[in-house]
Image 1 (tube, one colour):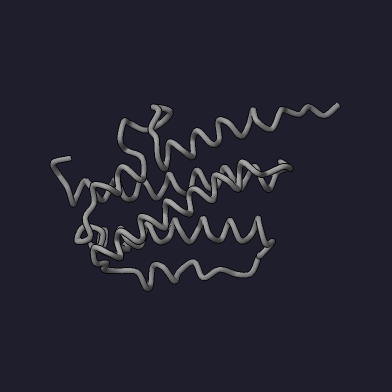
Image 2: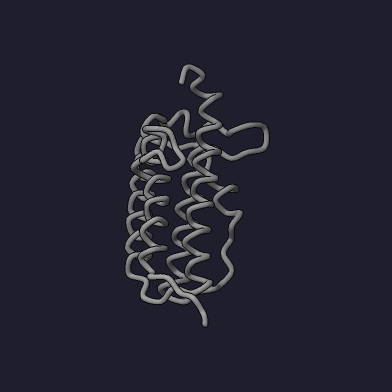
Length: 159
């Protein structure tokens, strides 16, 4: 006999982890006020435009990449669009941002995050692919949060 769990038993903790990564730290794995949105609110457009390290992209590119990831996920789930995505485009094109562009990126990230949460909440069938998609979204976003926070150690040493 195959064992199953109530989908909410998976979804509720997954959404809590996603929310911790993006918005509200609960102490699951982040320190207070270190979520992605809280972190980005401490970064100005000059800092967002600085390439991190010798071969890395700017913080603005990191944010644009997370948005791109969430958009590709949404297209795949909603439209069944599995066409190849140009994962390198962001890294090649997003560099310096002015104050309006930086704010627009942060706003776009909030919008993409909200759509992603709704997408996961509206999921009616949970299988290996959909569970993997949620887990990959959490891990991928947390990785880029770590990249951004690590860069801030250099850009804002008094933090």
